[in-house]
Length: 236
Image (cartoon, rainbow, N blue to C red; front, side):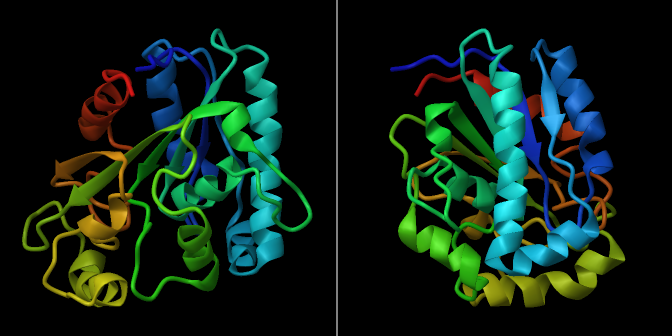
């Protein structure tokens, strides 16, 4: 069993169309827990639109790589923890691999020994081509030296915590992901899609995919404490 230093630096890659400021409270909260440094990958909405194509993924992962190498120099363990929200969590699975992508080998698993995903659509019946490629080429906990942790949310669409946006669109989103519009999820991603096969997993009640989907999401202080202590409280 291996213990990972809870104070090692963190690099956060957000979700599709969500800009870096949405993750600033999470970054500050993690610093208050003793994490030595926390960086959020800067992504504009245009940057996210470009991730429809491979070169857009390459641009995003190049930024991840730059930030990982930057904070690794201050890491007490010599390693870095990755946190990916939504699409960011799927993209970081590719970053960990030592297989070439768009002419570059990131081999992020040589520098990062933990990946935490928050509401990431890992397994989906109708995934985008690039997400499907990741799950096909790097299934489950692909890198043996990495602690994979997946966090999923359950949101009661009839509760006060769900937004009108969730109530209108969740069932269609669930249907596209797992062919079941009656399943449980965070308002966008079903639980069974967010739980990466083989990963340590936590399901959080009353948790929305993001601020658009409900008043409490993975980055809210009401949820951070529980999932972060689940992450750092176990060996792997």
